[in-house]
Image 1: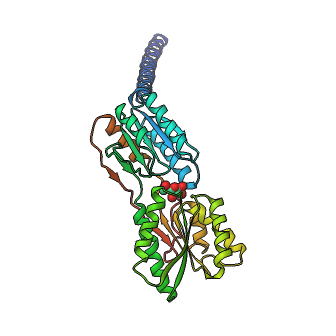
Image 2: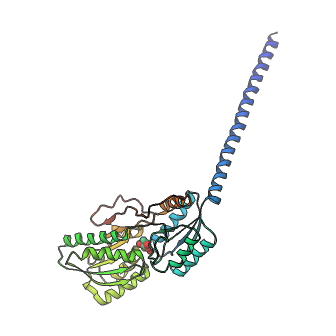
Image 3: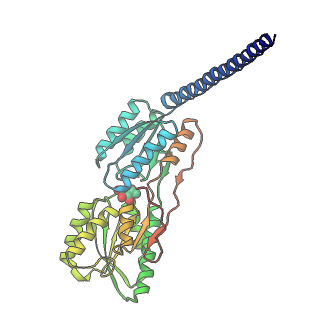
Length: 345
Ligand code: GYE
């Protein structure tokens, strides 16, 4: 009897255990199915987002600077994040390559076109073709100058005029701090006829005009390239030597190129010559911290999110803001930059 009872208990016990095991097994199966379904469904949604919903053609003008490379990277990253299919073409600094890329986007019937025009003029025909095909065009970073208006929907990029003003305002403060009554400036400009070249020059000139101590003795074109910046500086030093008090350069690459030449000629950049740059990429910021650049006006290449949001709105037939400028600041020897976040470009 005792044994029989014990056996019954054991059997009941093992039945209960088997029952619990079954429940656990069932739960495990359900969870696997649920998780499988959720991730499967998620995958299908992302594929649909990527494949069918929005195809964006983006023509980048080249890879001349840390700014440009950072901008391309940001656009690729944000397209991925927003589930937008991106057709990206790099024009290697040639307008004809950009025009050909835009025509390919039109033939391919992309939903939206975005592009960073290398120069302002020469886009009328291709932009008319995009309009006739019913494809909205977003200008990224730089502007165009067309005879007909309404060929593009909006411009997402920096306020280059304001950048020039900020550069000049720094120089006025620096001139006060040094107690100088005359400063001779050489300007190394970006690509001729490009929006940043025109407006960074205009903003700077309009501002220094109001201060009789400041004089631009020479303006040369460095095409936003490091090699050109160096070559321009070599020539400027040959012609003007120790007369040069200030270098105003339209981007970091040209500035870094110029610095090597200044040092080779036996001058101390940041001390013998005031150095003002634009962009604020990590390499130039590091040099500013060493004291060889005095001021860098920020120009951010992180335009990707705004481009993707705008493309989505255009695809849905919504209206968009015509002009979107990111917030920008400047970095200088007047500030403590020890806690500055990594720049990301
Ligand atoms: O400053 C320069 C680049 O258009 C804002 O182009 C851009 C400029 C940038 O190559 O470094």
